[in-house]
Image 1 (spheres, rainbow, N blue to C red):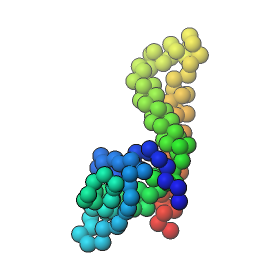
Image 2: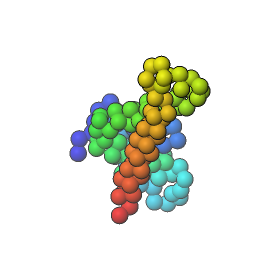
Image 3: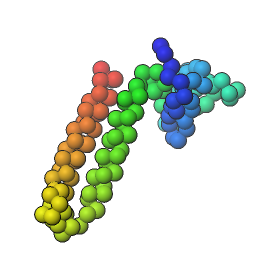
Image 4: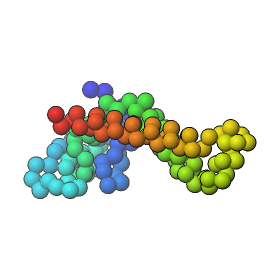
Length: 132
């Protein structure tokens, strides 16, 4: 398995660590619960860091997730921000943009909502495959 260097990996609850500095992952068996799923051993800290994510999820972010995955995630966030901006346009301005500039605000809102909803449903379906 190839670890992608210089990638920030989420350990949960706002904790991030560089992928190439993580040297070991151990699932917590006893006293496991919310916020206590995995012990993460690093090259720079003597004691393990307690992560709220599973070792499989952390390992996936360290090695499997491609740069394309992160670019897609960033693109989704940009489209979501764009949709928020379009939602803030008053209806009268939207009608003006449609008639004067041929920019269909309502059409773009529908298109972005459909895309983001479909993309989210596919992501949930992919996550459900983990539990089969």
